[in-house]
Amino acid sequence: MGNRLTKIYTRKGDDGSTGLASGERVGKDCLLIKAQGDLDELNSSIACVRAYSDDKKIDTLLVAIQHHLFNVGGELSAPQCDLTSAADVQWLERWIDYFNADLPPLKEFILPGGDAAVAYCHVARTVCRRAERNLVEWSREQAVRPELIQYVNRLSDLLFVLARVLEKQRNIKSTYWDKNLELPEPGK
Picture 1 (cartoon, rainbow, N blue to C red):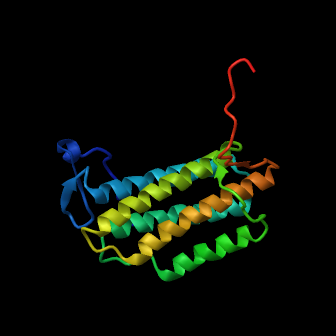
Picture 2: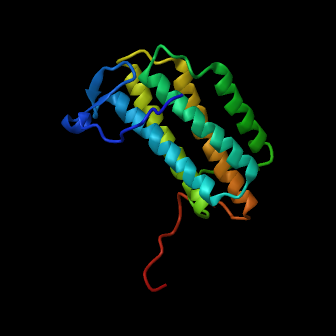
Picture 3: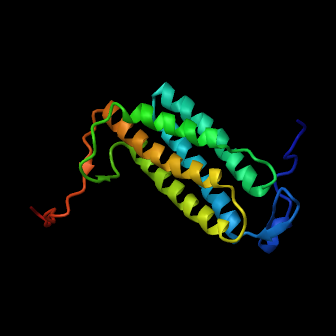
């Protein structure tokens, strides 16, 4: 592969548009671009998890996911390229089952917290959910293969499980939602 990005700025987007792989130009506020931006933000959030986690297995998994997120974004930009399959969704499910097997059953919702790796995992999960919402909304206007939406949906599940795994590894006690929590008062 030759040099793909020989010049970083082109000035073509100064009018509020951006180019798709097809050569078509769309507004930067287009739902497709919002979904792709969410995927980019998700990829960066996953990088933060990697930066704060010292688990080699999780790091290897997250690197593979980062690569695959580029495939998802690429397929959105060039729908004629099928870069995500049902096998990819099943692959995520196997990882969810693998990590979830050693976790205690949940009896209540968990509040995001823990240390930086756990918190970033929750941030990545919420960014992933936003990407999914924008993908679903985009799919109401343009054909989006179900595997893309399924992949992003499973990925948010995996990120939730990984947050719990990281808590367990670090001996961090989960903070469970308490609907009857007594509100603290200043000075007490």
